[in-house]
Length: 470
Image 1 (cartoon, helix red, strand yellow):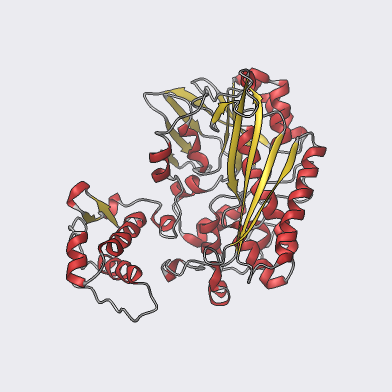
Image 2: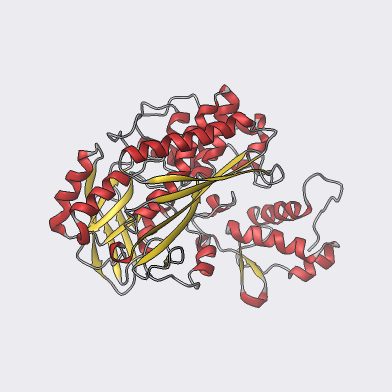
């Protein structure tokens, strides 16, 4: 197979390979099921390095348009077999991180296998009755949307919410193992100093300190352990905000996620305004922002801020939406920018109160972050998760679906779709748990239940009566 490679082009060679092969597949020149030439033959016939060809084919595989067939090389994917996440994957992200789990799931599961976070022995103080939890997460590409807002308005305070996002994505994961003690958190800011000057760093640090002080006022013992600001202009055109949290807790207090049949699933709404929040929340959290950003926002941002996206992504997937940040979000009091940048809510006060009042009847806690409504499948054993009484779809997710044409099946794998935290309790504790949530101004409801099964699976029924199986 001969490719038309222009060595003088500013487009990288591996991207030229991707574009030409993808075009041939889309136009039918390469038919579904057709075997591609081997990496070695493609490299030889076109005078290319084998590793360059391999890199291109891996990208096409990630997009779901070709498939690896063991040692026989690659074939063109059959349309019915293509991943429903191909649009998401083509932007360089994965909703279920299957390739990551294929590696980490074979590593040491820690001292409490099955817990939401990895738990180790107490290496920090050496107490055999205690354990350590260390966790890392961040605001993801939501920081790029804040960057766009900052560039448009000059107001660096938009990054206060990004600081909160980074902290909450750690804190609320830790809540899922029942953490009830002190938390020490460290922040890492990776920035392009040319585009994100000192006022951005100042806003992020100020936002972190202010939010942690608010949490301490609510009885959440979280403290700053410092951090790092790295100038990495070669790695990012904008800014990336991550955090790492560490804590010590009693082994006896760990919520082990012993999820079995005959439990009720209580969901905590991701929208509205909690008593401890200063503004109403759109429900977005910090997952799926790559898709939300490109599918919602217009090409105006590609034209004006090329540093905010990967030039290797196909142009028809870059800022291909109908909105600008200041536009009104349909059926919502928010503008599009306000909705997408809505700071990630923490459920810490509710979870800590529930653990005090319900205690061991809390059998499991799942933060519907990566994997969204399908996250539950990773926990428990031989459980059929039935979610048949979900919250109404928040306007932002409805707008994302309409703008992108993403299938509803995929939407539930990428976005929380109305509740971002769920607790697994006996039926007789449902009303107690709902009352606790409502005392903080958060809507809660029994969104489903668990049944016995031969393996873990999920049946989800939305409010239109459509069912999806995972």
